[in-house]
Amino acid sequence: MKDLKMYINGKFVESSSGKWIEVLNPSTEEVISRQPEGTVEDVNEALDAAYNAQKEWAARPAIERAQYLQKIADGIRRHNDEFVDIIMREQGKTRGWAQTEVGVTADYFDYMATFARHIEGEVIPSDRKGETIILTKRPIGVVAGILPWNFPFFLIARKAGASLIAGCTIVLKPSQLTPENCCTFAEVVAESGLPGGVINIVTGKGSVVGNAMAESPKVGIVSVTGSVGAGESIMAAASKNITKVSLELGGKAPAIVFADADLEKSAQWVLDSRIGNNGQICNNTERVYVHHSVKKEFTDILLKKFKAVKVGDPCKHADVDMGPLVEKRALESVTAKVEKAVEQGAKVLCGGKPIEGKGYFYPATLLDNCTQDMNIIHEETFGPVLPIVEFDNIDQVIAWANDVDYGLASSVFTKDIDTATRMCRELEFGETYINRENFEAMQGFHAGVKKSGIGGADGKHGVEEYLVTHVTYLATQY
Image (cartoon, rainbow, N blue to C red; front, top):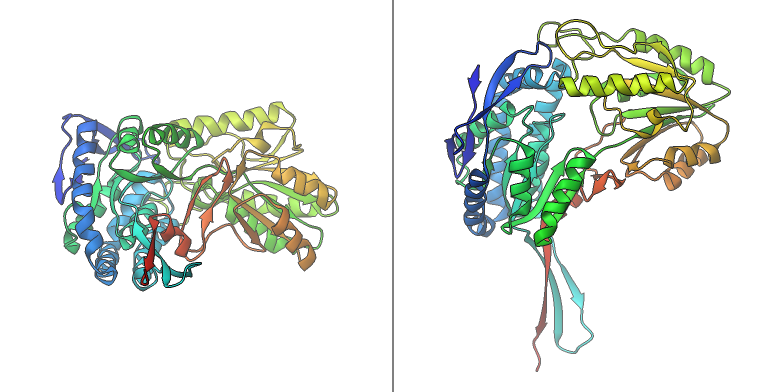
């Protein structure tokens, strides 16, 4: 078992509490590490370090800040295998998904470094003679970055990469379920020579560490990826100082299969979008609507693919398609949601019950005979369960797709450009994927509407989250 350490002001430290929180391998239920149980005092120390380092960091030329991001990216690649093993062990990702996460994390730091020469302002014409209006962008200050457990490593880059290139400093709080990758990342940060205080890491409980970060008047923005409940709690804490929040929360992504779709390819894309990361992604496909004329054929194709999904410990079996759910509570939640669906009339075509034995394993599960009024259509499942709903026409399916509290991702399968463009106009989601799987690009903008969140990440608009505007009215004649 490994004892982890926090990283504050360039130093590896334990918590002032002297207490620890154990971390389990979800495949085996064995304790694999323990993390310091951070306190409010630890948070304040980290925020002080970030606050004191921020002005000097922002004063450096952006191209110099970019060089540190590139060094961090290189360090991640040097430690690639170590990070892959950690993510598989503490989060349950398959090796392929873990390798992708580590690779994209390094690439993301490199990508954010390119914005060194692209943080731009504006010159605006004035109504007055001899006056010029100049709009410039400044860093928002200290960032509180609260990380999820489902992409624990990549979200470090998504929050810290944009923050640092903008001239901000950051305090990161990893999920208490998956802290080791973040604590190990601190070693890469130390190797890069990044000045103390620019990146800080505090481990512990969200109710203590996360809320203390959000409540601090020294924080310019709280960036959270997590559940709707976590977002509500953080918003309440941040409201005390009217602190800006950026929230990426839950999702209930619909996949809509029209009669003219390529059914074989569509079924594969739907499968990939459902079982990715063991069914634990905010933009996973959570429900599929199929036109009545192709419903039976599509269901038969999809069922065959679902039955072929292999589940197991990714650290022991290289050929598995899915690992475990992240914790016992997640397994219990998914189980309860399927049981409720069956109670309401759904038919289990495959899966439907936890896999017996050690670990939090749940099989790929396909549900038929589902209707729009069922809980499984409205509540986020966050597990490898897919309900099928039959629809008759485009007006009906648009209304049903939008009939949820969430608005993150959606997908459409059709060969008709008119259908596709109408769906893009009328679906109430931050992202729509046409004839492909649900997986965003770093140069896009990952953002939701409704209860899926506020603000967003990636691309130039993601960098803008960490900037504030300043307007100068420059009169040269008076």
